[in-house]
Image (cartoon, rainbow, N blue to C red; front, side):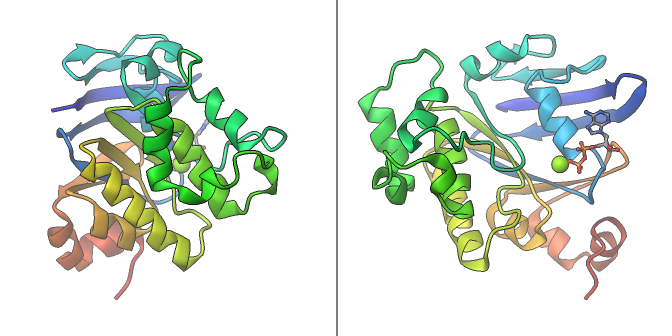
Length: 234
Ligand SMILES: Nc1ncnc2c1ncn2[C@@H]1O[C@H](COP(=O)(O)OP(=O)(O)O)[C@@H](O)[C@H]1O
Ligand SMILES: [Mg+2]
């Protein structure tokens, strides 16, 4: 088990958002977290990263309790976070954007090369301004920036949001190859097809709680669950 989230309760001020969320990511697994807008998926990732620390419950990463660790320390333990939306710096070059992802400020040739294996197009555009990249390329840059630290676990928040079908395809391949390199993933998705194709296990959230856990094949065949929690009709 690389990540174990146990009964966390998370608040924004007085708003009680997560009501005892528990989930597990196994070593080398891709785990998808699905659910409609506003159910608490992003808050779950922020809780893990220490950005919105849970008031109760526990989060254990790689055998270590990280529940109350300050947010700046979490990536150093080996968790990469790719927030929702394309958070890159438009006025910085691709290379500068990548350097910002570095934790100790030193660019190791190997991790850079390893990252470019996923994103050959970025390597050709190192001196280009981030803001001049296409939407899809900006999303790739955001992922590259997280991978450059060689994380053991990557949290991705809706990486296929707003991408054209061709880029959704590419994103699925990237997720599979990250997994192929032994990295574990917790993937928040709205796109059921992507989750079904790339994940080993799927959780569904509703109103700050996990309401379903199953294998992709099980969910694919469960029309009632898909309709009730995802609004997917057949
Ligand atoms: N910074 C915030 N302050 C107060 N409420 C928030 C904040 N961010 C999100 N929320 C609320 O928390 C709930 C869950 O949001 P979120 O985790 O972003 O959902 P999801 O990612 O599943 O769409 C929503 O009701 C949302 O309005
Ligand atoms: Mg969200």
